[in-house]
Length: 311
Length: 307
Image (tube, rainbow over the protein chains, first blue to last red):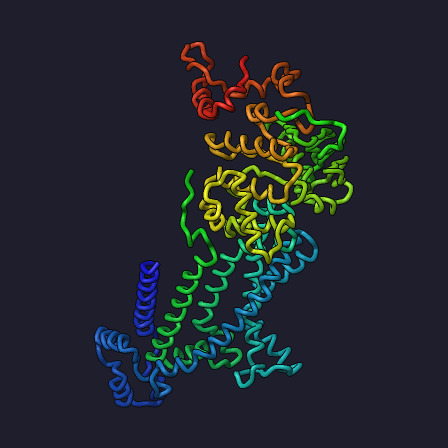
């Protein structure tokens, strides 16, 4: 088990390293000049050169990369150009907001999608099930910027129940959470329905029914117990993905998380800030993924105990 | 097999004009067509037939385990006097109580993410033999049930999960689970067909032993005349949803009345000297090779038909 954890930890760190290295190269290949963003369009060539020198952008890319690697190992990715503060610190301050939003969205998804999927699986091919099924397809098809703007128009402008932007009160959490959750509920509930339908038709369920196990126990203990593993994995993976910033939704709702931060960092070509954001979110995503893998044996005795059956 | 039952008492299972119609895309199929039979205490009645003959559908229909919206049952099925065709809810009175199922494939018949113990405890609770709170009584009862089906070190097996046990052991666990409620009637749907030949005999022996001890009635579903002959009192030969022949085991085996039964009899492999004469029909060797391995249990081979 320790070996397994160490191996996965090593793989995770390698993934993070390759990710930040790729981003380092890509942002330097992309058009745009941080010096122009920083000094403004009216700056003279001399001013631009001075800025480049200040940021170390006049050095060869390989040398910049070497400096970046040194910074990586000390955990200090340099000053953000636009914030004039350590980039890591700027990202770290934004992280709790994204974490809050992602946690709220994944909880809402789980609370709605699991019962909904179970509900659908218990009445296959009925009118009601078909109706809900169509709704989930609609939920899956609506782009989140559109859903967000519709919700904003409806519940912040026309009927001003919730604030339109920011996170000044807990009410501000509601609309962005719903916006993210609609798509996730559509996806997860259909997955729950598929898994449940398979498990409700499994031989062990028929045999359990034959010995008088009640319908609710058949659904939840047997069918859900066996559907939990893939559903849990899907929820965890989606949560990890959200930590990379729910970019569009954060921008639509002016949410002060890493998603809106990285948009700003990209616009201003704020290299240290881009790198710090990618590093921190990649670390978090890999960490969550590792936790999911470690939780697997708890959920599935076949993973925990391995194959042992022989004649 | 067992003491001659007294037919004056009410049968454990009485089936009259039982029909199962399955609703399929191709239309309505009458999978079981007006079958009638009965099982008394201590009796084993076997329905034998080839795949698709409707024998498993009969068993699943009697247990009401067919999809409610796709299978239409009619006729009368009285389980210990309870009519389960007239009232769909009536089956709840007998499931996990007087009636128990021994499934076809033990490897898929238990939930893979729940331990043997938790599934056995649940059956004991449903039977009302011990309450959920009394952990000691549950454990003691579970251990005794596993002992009765001859599972070694029962305490250890309770903590195991299905994937850690062999097919034969799992079938014993399933029989123990079935016994939790002290059932009067066991429906065994091809209980040995998914098992290794070396353990098939052991499972049949166990069923016979339990029947002898408890006077349980058994409805056995099989395609294997060797199995049928070993354990049955009476046999119903099923083809295309109805019984083509019914009677005492010996009578059916010795004097089959229909070609279909003769074909089933001929399908039972024979252990004998290796036939190497060139006159043997093509493919005969292959048939012999598989046939002899399928009957390595002497208890099964003695029943082989001798044409």
